[in-house]
Length: 220
Ligand SMILES: [Zn+2]
Image 1 (cartoon, rainbow, N blue to C red):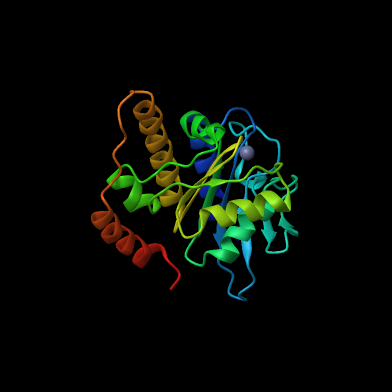
Image 2: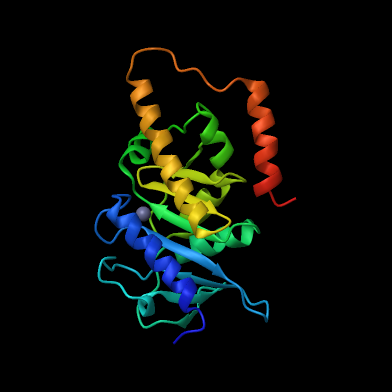
C-alpha cells in the first residue's frame, strides 16, 4: 500500500463525484492534492491522463514531484500537471485543485467575460469577481501562466473557451468552490438573459467581505 493511500483516495473520490455531478464529461478535467512529506519535498497526488473516472482505483492516482517527475503510479499523469504544480507554488495555503468543464461556467467562458461580484457567497467563498484566463491550448506552459495570473488570490477562475478551475485549503473546500462557481455562473447566465440590469454587491460591503476572505485565504 502506498504511503499516500488516504490522500489518493480523497483525490479519487473527488474526481468520481466531479464526473457524476456533470462537472466534466468523459475523461476531461483533473483533480489534485498537495502531499506533505517530512523531507519538505513538494509532492502532488493527481488524476491520470485520459481515463474514465468510474472504474479508476486508488492505485491509478499518480504522485509527482514539483518538477512534474512521476514518483508513484503506472499511468501517465494528467496533461495539466504543471498547471496544478504552478498553483501550489504560487499559493501556499492551497492544498487542493480541481479543473472542470461545467456547463454554466463554460457558457460564461465562451463569452470572453468574467463574472462581476454579484452575490455575497460568491465573494466570501471565491474572493469576488471571477476572472477569465486568456485562451491557450490545454497542457501548455502558456495556459498555466494565464490561469495562475487570472486566478490571483481568488479561489476560482474561468478558462476562455475551455472551462474553469477551483482551489481550496483542502479537497472539501476545492469541491465546494467548484459548486459555488457553477451556481454563480448559472445565476449570472439567467440574470444576463432576464433583460434587466444586473446589480453588483455594493462597494463597501464588498471590501469588508474581501478583507475577510484575504485574511483566511491570502498568503500574507
Ligand atoms: Zn480542461
